[in-house]
Length: 301
Length: 301
Image (cartoon, rainbow over all chains, first blue to last red; front, side):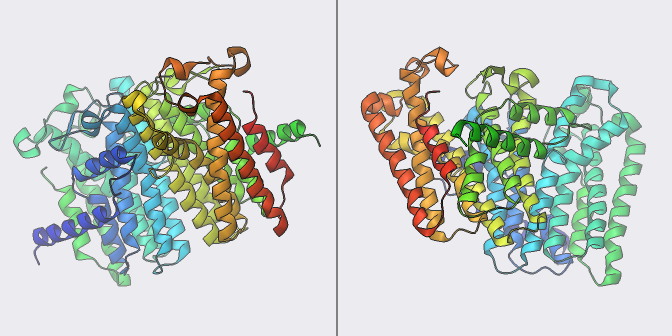
């Protein structure tokens, strides 16, 4: 099957898994459920649950225990966008061409919807304990990784460092910037791929390899974002370009220039793919996963 | 030992357990950790972790596995206050005589600190899986109860219904109000007591009994709050009284009058205590727990 066709099928599958775990909108607290579902249903690449499922398959996972975790990580990703878009944060009114949650439901309900999604992510992942097919230790470990990478030692830590960076403008160092990218972007990619590996029963060395590869994929993904903001156009990207420069935001590109940033981005992604391909010697192969990663890093939008 | 003295000792013990699990303030994301710790250290009655520990003891629990859960529920309670106090929500500048988190750290950091506390609550409770003393099924079940009672089917659901109630003023029915109290207040009391019971290995019938008693304790606690807002004074309460009437907030007292509300409050608390005392026939007794509950419900501040 060709990649685009396969991607489309997998995306549909992922969408239906996520939908299955969203709350039913009813009762006195209906509005927060509507706001949560609205936020998730705005769409997106569903990158994290897909990377999770494909890493799970890479290590021979074949059960449905992965499904609540797939839904959970998308809820976590979504809540972070809902809170990020708030007037008190980035004050964004549109995302993917639709009004952001706070514009539709108000600030208070958007805060609650974000809280609701984060909490519901854990409720959802915990449903895996009711499923027979996987051992409890794997589930507990996967949950711990998910929680850690989403929290103050992961994504929330990255958001914090990002807000601090905005206050110091061009004083931001490369070390600071790498911390932001590692935590704000790479941590959830790591969570996705590591939980997939853990739930499939991968060994410690394999999980460590996945953590390293996912780090490089996350950073490369972020640098690509920054490059596109300089080199792409509104038509291709579907959102205004040049916003980083306009906001005087320090990025990999502003620090190193497009050429050197592209070079580093390529090196990192090549290395990540090399790491994952090294698993073929142990009999672990997932062609689609490699293609998916390549498509993310070379994407033009 | 007399009750006040014992309460003081238990409170100290609880404080030191909570402190032990708070994050160390360091690194690029230091500010969010400071804001989290500031929020928790503002203090409070530490009611939920104490009820949890005492219910755990009631059913013979004697291990340290309860400690991460005690810290976790206080983090959840605290995050809900941090987000509640935000300008976009209740816009409160003071809590327990100290400036609220957003006043000290700004709105954006307060949102992140709330997110951080909620996420860290799960990270903390998940640390129980690294402790040998308790079975994994109990921990997974306790986690699921905690997550459910904190989320859209619990506390967040109650917050949502409360915000909706503010928009409809005196149209709020008794059914709507009971839903708010049950979810916004009683759900976390239930989570505290039920997780205590589950972790101690209580049976399904006992857990169900605890859920019912905790419901009544939670509602009685809330009605007492509403009564004090009418009958107490600024000096006794340490915060302005009459705020419900001023805000035209529908409460149990505004619906039924002080006398009938007090009567119902007493009936509920008496019944909750009767339920817990009925466990003495099975050999489960915790005199301090009963005294603690009585003190909460008859409190004058």
